Image 1: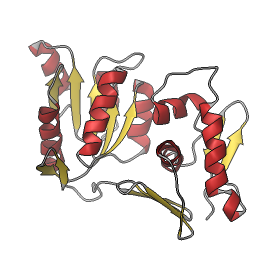
Image 2: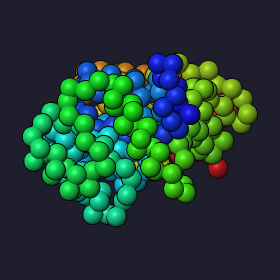
Image 3: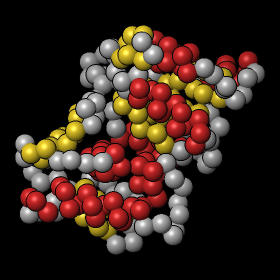
Image 4: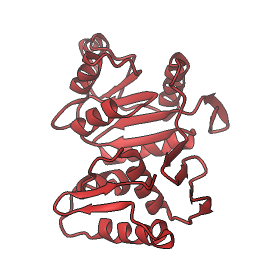
Length: 239
């Protein structure tokens, strides 16, 4: 069960949040995490579609008005792929026709902006109670090779040894474990870990990857993060 504001709302879930507004996105993500959920926050529709079709989520929260591929298009693509994951649409569009269009496209619920977090939290809990099928339990731990992450305790071990990581290092390693062997570009890591758009002048990614390698690779005498020149990084856990 998840506890937020002194009230119990329901089971913890793994949630994909698509929201391009950085203020609303960070506020929503932080609130949901305080409720005990694990949240992947993305700002681009195409990234959200890729994540939704390659990973398992208990709930998708999609902002309808985002650049490139909008939330409604992401929803339609997911439903066309026969994915029945519950979807909550967020939008500043308040017309009845807009809400009907979203529901007809396959949304399970619709919440217009601006909204109170307490209402969002209650709707999330309600959708979580509906989504109780086999294989839909919330993911609170990630394992890749001999590396274990506990997302609720924010702890990391490798070969049974505790590894002390700061908050950014933990989120960076979490992003690698969730990547399933795919290349993570510098831009993707800036968005996932630092909630930043591309900044060609910053070396924050390289700096933190180097520090992370010093903690999870050097003491164990191997390499699990491979640099792909001109592309990004690939996580290759030791089996």
